[in-house]
Image (cartoon, rainbow, N blue to C red; front, side):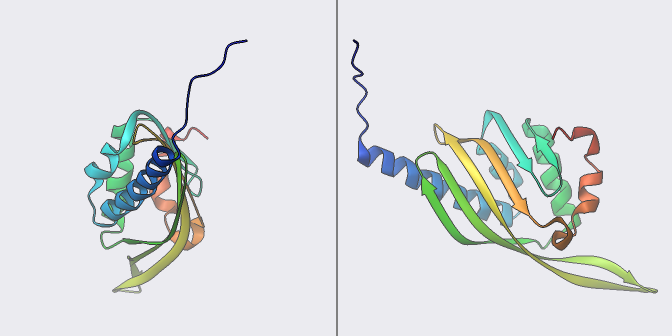
Length: 157
């Protein structure tokens, strides 16, 4: 019988978990500031990004970048606030709230309508890079259904 010589150092596991949580927070902060390139560079070359509300999935950085840029174009003042975060081993979970405004027409007048919705992101890390990201939120509250229409050819779910 062969015995495993792998010893898990609890301090290393704890620091990796903390790094995952800190990475998730910093990535959401970058997204909130419109730093899309910085956000996308946090992903591994082989990753899956899934937005369950819009039923979209991306596996390449170019597509993900285009999606985030279009989202920013539609909601240029969007802000992401991390409400709570949790880390465990190579996974980090963040509850967040997005606030933004949407331009709309009320007769011949242009109005700005406030948007506010909550959601959760779950990120899995490998070597400090994201290999899997999943977002959950209410599509109707987010008013982002029009955004999904730009990417219907990329739907993989």
